[in-house]
Image 1 (cartoon, rainbow, N blue to C red):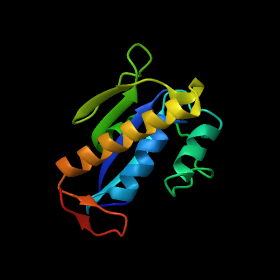
Image 2: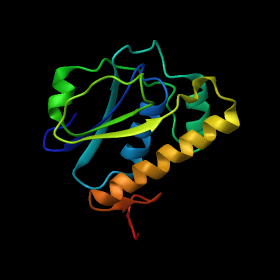
Image 3: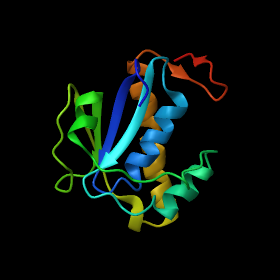
Image 4: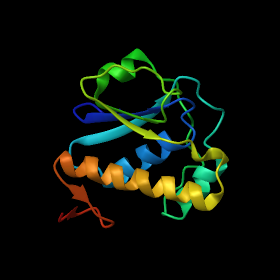
Length: 145
């Protein structure tokens, strides 16, 4: 994480699907002065292949991303913590502001259903970006809402 930037931390259990997608979208559309990271309480070995495939459809390559462990330090540095996983499976997190998105795990879903979860994540990330002061479009310039 870079100094001086405010951070959004996306959290799920394994940091291999939903939180990786949310982080990638936030990085793409982040308003000036903001960055994103993601983590999980039991990080997987790698990002789920289906998540990689779905994000390649969006022009974002997650194939080299590594799931990371959720630490107290990450939670302390985050201005906003977004828990993306569904009820009953989510880690308890602390932060200045915590949002819960309650999304089902798309890992075992057919690709079409997983794509719907990806699209919901994109919509929620864009909403969050808008609440933080704007959105950056495909060309990196602010978008109108």
